Length: 262
Image 1 (cartoon, rainbow, N blue to C red):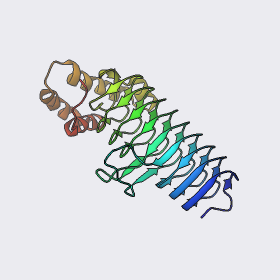
Image 2: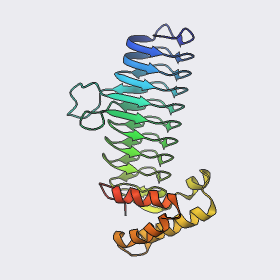
Image 3: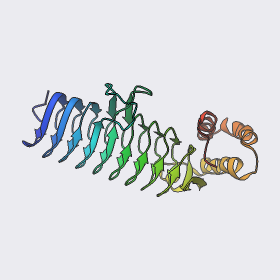
Image 4: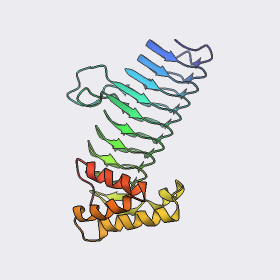
């Protein structure tokens, strides 16, 4: 079903069970096929491919040559009807690839709201991206990766499968992340190591001086005190009673399956 207010270029191909909402635009030579739903006000530019069981929310901007909902590159994938779900107000730049999930995991790949996915970023199967993230040019999120809210993964960085990138953290360009990056941390290098807090990002997101001071103390306790993780966690547990941000840091570390960068 295509809403009467949608603007579809004559050269676009739309086939299958496709729903296009009001005020959507679809540019020249775009191909949309499968069980696809595109929300109100979304702009799909030229030469875009959208396939499979894909749901795209409102007011997204999808630039030329993006590929969304294509079969993933997991050798175990056998054509199962897995999905891609994308929220609202995302900017998906040229040649971004977002692959469908696998039944071995959540069977879906999820992009939240208000994200910027830069040119040629690769979002592999079963990835979860939160809200307000920045995924840089040619960045690679391997299968089953999670990127929490307001995190940044900069250009040419690669996140190893099953790793997590915590909220408000920042992975500098050309980094290789093979363990989890805790929330609020600035990480860089191959392999990525911590370089303090992402202070610029925290300030931009409204963190006040008292909370920044507490996070600095938590970071020093965990990374610079010379204590074991177990010893540092005891101190952070006390600090977490006052600061929810430190509780999130502590919970992230305690539930990490791959271990955190050191």
